[in-house]
Image (cartoon, rainbow, N blue to C red):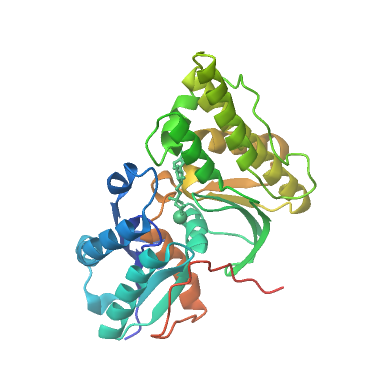
Length: 342
Ligand code: KG4
Ligand code: ZN
């Protein structure tokens, strides 16, 4: 009998979230188990790879069980198994890859390898179907990229960060403000209580490319705080957060605008952990409405901006249609890049 519903069991363990999901037909989440390890890493101010791997081992089989139970499906209902195999922390990736391979082998299911960043983009696919070509602004803890997608499985990076990723800058600045890792959400909240009074640099904003640099902003921020401390002055934390966030948002919006001038696409996908930023979401919405009315903002739903396996299941649906399967020798690839045919 022909299978009516396609069910993918998806795994995501690229960093510090252990996640297992069941996704139906690439567009319906039946379950999305996410075990976050943030508490274990907070006291170190960032993710400790060795600790992350150990937590993944503890959580992964629990995740499989919970994802299947909550979705109310059995192994016999599944069509395929999907897994993030890069980019990310090698030890973390290996746990997901090994679990997925073992599960696929034991139950004779096809194994679909998924790029983590493609997964982030496909989180927005739960909002509406994609129409190509489209542009995606991918902003996470490790990446800041503008991606041109000409087809469901074609990702051309047209802009990238030269140094720190946007999320990394939020986290480093957060540390100076005494905010726990990951600091993005709290800086976003504080920023809404303050004003952009410190006039931090907008690096590369006028350069004729779609690239980013955030390390100068981070240094300017740290210098401002240290100089004030030496003079025993107190700076307003909300204003500091607002000024930092305004600089990041201005640069992201300017570079996306430049990309939209060259590629007047119908959809701008916003995805990755930093896509949860309210200042960024509002600024992009406003810019599109006033300057690029032909382009719709397709922002990943807030609960799917951070790392999760539901987004991996959505990206895997495309790979399944293309019959892009992995063999049992699939390995983690910590610096995996996007697939693109020129
Ligand atoms: O995509 P993600 O969950 O993990 C990676 O693949 O890197 O992104 C995590 C990043 C962290 O740097 C965190 O501080 C940032 O996303 N983040 C935010 C917000 N929520 C999370 N940054 C700015 N504003 C937010 N509301
Ligand atoms: Zn991520």
